[in-house]
Image (tube, rainbow, N blue to C red):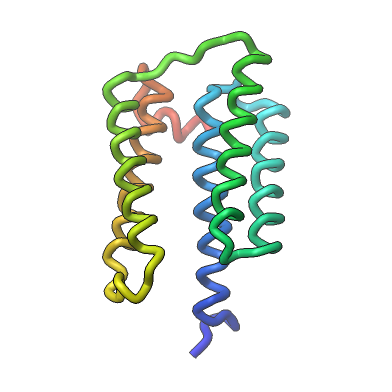
Length: 154
């Protein structure tokens, strides 16, 4: 039965929007822009709008999941070039974020074939590793602070 009027497909569609937006905002945070700033809010709003537009256009087209992330990397590079500042990162946590990203990508790919992943274990692995990516990337972007202090700033 539908929950809150949404069937399985609509919930999955919303999950796509929120997951891609979260990844896109995580990519943007690597620029380590000032908190709070109008530019940061504009960038986050633009990222959200791009994801929504792509997902509304074709939510089950894999390209419409990947292109917003590529766009995010492009915007990150533009921001770094514009600011002429190389951000500092915690190398150990950055490596853990990279390994988690690779693991998440493998799980995402393997989870695309629902007939082979009928228990949704690969899909669950994708969610677990994306959580690890987020944790380690936030840690590596703020190498001299505790995570509780970072959360209090936002």
